[in-house]
Length: 263
Image (tube, rainbow, N blue to C red; front, side, top):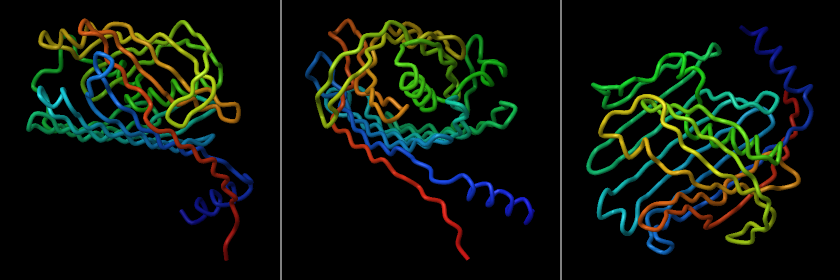
């Protein structure tokens, strides 16, 4: 064990300086263009070989009349040649005097271990299969993967299998239009993509609304000195006039990490 630790330390010290991007973002959710629905914060640390991201959601305004919601989620994993490989996901969701807690980890072979409270008696028809789970990422890691792919390619393309502990679905990006953006602390180019949510497995009859989420739009911030393109806006059309998550504040820090030996 000691020899292995010394070998890892030597490898790290020979790697030279590294850099990481730290993003602190907040968003406001609005319905019908002006009615407050909630507030979201996202803190993300992204380097060339790893990431950690935490998101919180607090319902506000009109949404509290129907279902008061507080949510905190955290995900982390590795990045290899630009490909996101998630390792852990934790969710604590309080809503309508209920609480749901999810803890998931994945191994090198893709097998998922999950602890969910309360556990489900029904897992949908059909439930998500082991193979579907293995090919998926957690919801936060899916957003990281999208942001990295868009940041690298400057294109809207790809399907992202996602599993949240019960539901298995695809998030698909398509289209693509570059525009300028100047709001809430970010000024620069954005890539506007169409966003599709495709329900696959784990859904029940009562989940009909989740199965039919209409296509929306997501905007990614394009910056010249990073391959991570954070989301600045998400819009989903609704019969009542639409719901939008829009950037409220944007902070980014470029952190250079110099690895040095110590006695």
